[in-house]
Image (cartoon, rainbow, N blue to C red; front, side):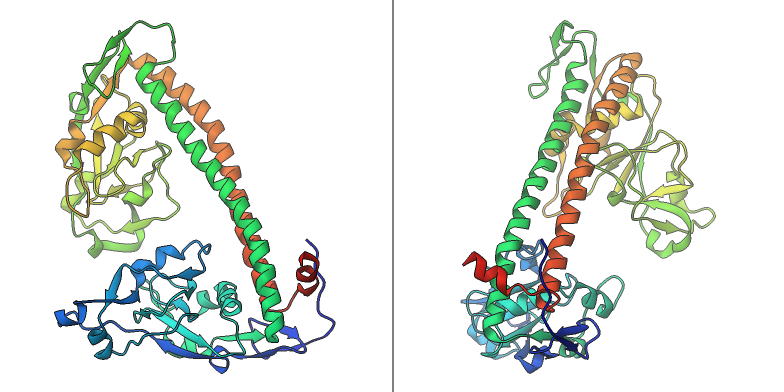
Length: 450
């Protein structure tokens, strides 16, 4: 899509905006909208949280706007009472107020579809008649680089209110704001549709991958092989010459990481493998986000130093995530949330165990064993008792090689789809930024569509 530029520009005086159309105004958002902060009524006063009727938008509700596809919000996890509101710094804000998450989940924006209050984690703008809420919300969507620049903190990122007050935008005449918002509604909807198609493809590829793995590790590769009842209802038949055993029948060693490693985090040192480094669609380690530890001499956790072929399982959250330690991995240890299984390899190969875990065999077993309330977890006994199909070792090697070839093909398609999604989202962000800063003139496009 090639769009024209405006006939005349001027310097906005705002670094991130650069030049803007000559007839646009530019300045801090507070010149065009009233800035409000939210608040949380005291939890020490139960009466503030009884007989609640006022929607109260909090970080627990940010999931609704995280992908950028939902502009208007009206549903909240919690509500607050009129008494609670009266005894806090929060206040009921009118429908049409534009909200921006500024703490933890930074940079997500939306428009209130009804009157509501928010927590202190949000900056809220009540727009004047000169500023269209939809235009301001698109402005905020195009300000990622500004938010990245202003965020403070390492583990808990925040944009502080003094910096929020300094945020600046370019504001065209109201009719032009309507035209830009209408144009972006139409064009972003097209892009979002393409993104959904690619995301659905990624889901289908994941389903296909799991089906291919599941069939191979439960039925084998020979369609004419004699079958027998496995003795497990949800597993059904397996090849007659296979066994079905528990993982512990070939275990040499099983443990989990030690607590207290946070005291030894270091920029240099050994790799510290966490749940996030395990995967749910492959058996390799994901080292794109790593933590390191300086292991003190004689540390109890040193027993978890990894060896080639160790199988790693998530045991708190993300059950079913797994990885096999490769030959070339540097010195590494595991967190308390990861189980380390070292096999004798007399009956089971590490890659086979990981593939069975990724199949419906693993997910069915683990789904029945997890315990806990809000945090599902596994005990080491649960891991040791995991159900494993067990063909002869040579057949395991043949099936592993087959699955490596077949899943690699699917992984290539997945990578292409993920790249397409990333490019589409980049295009969406660039289009919004260009339109709200006046780098392109979309007025003719809106008139053509009309």
